[in-house]
Length: 128
Image 1 (spheres, rainbow, N blue to C red):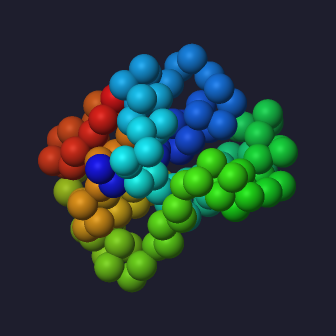
Image 2 (cartoon, rainbow, N blue to C red):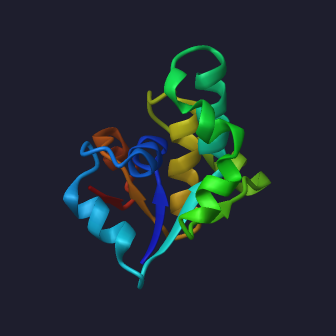
């Protein structure tokens, strides 16, 4: 499977936080799965750290690319098509980071690893 980690799933994985479901943990550790982190998550983590909403991630922000690569995860850049689809998504879900992850998962045929039930309204596959 190709999995795209939601930002909280990535942070919980890196921190060894038990908030990450056992299903998600198993999928991430399964060597048969390809795990990706979106550039949108890097943007979200860095932005939220800068404004004080994620004060405990300074070490991760300092070398996010290294943290992701060190786990063997791939990076997923944001394309023009991703931006177009994210911007055109219907519904009231306004979080731009979530909308980008939804668009990327849809276009790249990935399952989103997330506890966000709101994603289900968009028909994107979600693993939790």
